[in-house]
Image (cartoon, rainbow, N blue to C red; front, top):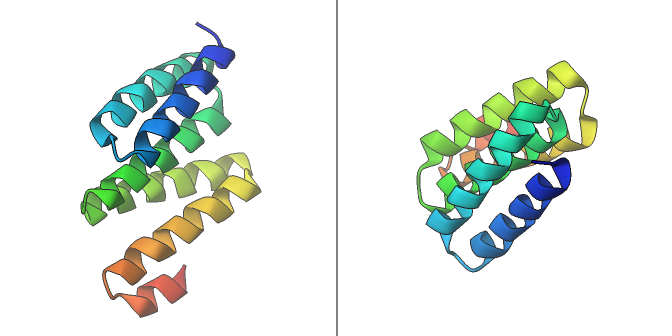
Length: 108
């Protein structure tokens, strides 16, 4: 297992997600996540969890999306990953707006 293999799995998952093949994307993301976790690659862990959160959102599971994205937000704050933190905040904002919770979205 290598970071390169995890990156490849992440990209393959992105392709599957773009084609709305969410279950296949989740399988690939989980494999990538296992590698990133084993190798303690925090940025990879964050990227995969963002994508999993987005799949939850696409599937109408806003609660699951928010749980993943808030987890990501904590990781990015703890590890000072500013660009990924911005991505997490944008996605959290989008979930709240999709639910009509505009004030909550503004709070993020």
